[in-house]
Length: 222
Image (spheres, rainbow, N blue to C red):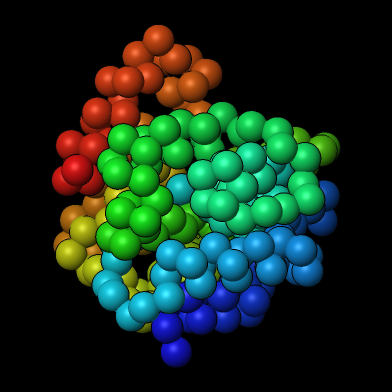
């Protein structure tokens, strides 16, 4: 089975952590037939091989990006305009996706970038509270709730294969702290390197966006 097949199999068998608060809604795009088909097209296009890649861990998918398309950091607009994968979803630009695909373009485009890297998330499933995106670490007791789930997901993804030498954490606050705690205990990666979160850049440091794209390129070796 190619890496593409392993990724799709992983997403199809995802189950949320147990004992989540009842008021938290789970965002699982892979339960949607259209999103699963789009994700399958994407991974068959860029990951139809058995090469080792390096993981970049986001937080969790949101309602307007990966939570719609099933592809992390990829909104419907970027999916068709950059990746060439047609879709019927509203072509609404999502901030993180916009930054990520500008960065990918500066690295040589998706064919070049995805040959070396694989986007995931500490929680591959998203969460919604009161019709708004919810980060996993904003759920009370998240460390107890999520540790077993995160460990299982990382173990599976390392078999795609993904590198155990280094991983990147997108988000330099609680996401980084939790990922490092898990890694310190289980030793999945020799090194975890932080990267600024695209949404933070686009919301609060937009005038310096090019600086942060350069930071990504330098840290990722482009």
